[in-house]
Figure (tube, rainbow, N blue to C red):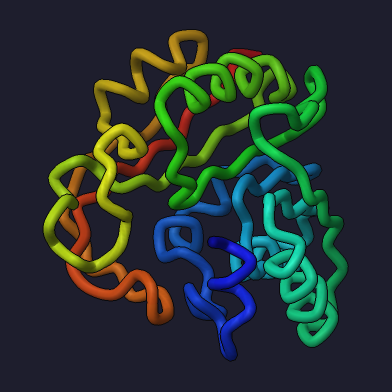
Length: 196
């Protein structure tokens, strides 16, 4: 599905970074950033332009090829990793920040990923999340049709018990990201830190 989506002309989710990331990227410690489900590179390129060393991870080789090309066109370098999140080795105390921006995962996989992610962050490292909430169902503005892949403030608290939330807000927000996310969306935004 994702290779097919990213094979279409243009950028499925646009070339501008996610608005929440653009507003709050300065909360991320400078250093190594892992962007999960990065797709065509818009968030990775944005952070690389601001001096971060970014690894764009995705299951779609087509998306990552576009991401690398987009980075080159913008005069920055990013690393790419084509892998399955179920088996991808996040490492231990390896990342200053990890991003999950609209990465719809089944809850069982997400819970396992979040368990591994909490130790993959360096002490003091930050996890930034943007996700659709179940209230998004039926709006037709993005996010799919499976509530199991969506999140809430409560699910984030439950699934990331060892991280300290510095920002955790549910809101309805105008999401304008290419042809696949356009319109008012029911979202949850989070910034959580691994204790130093």
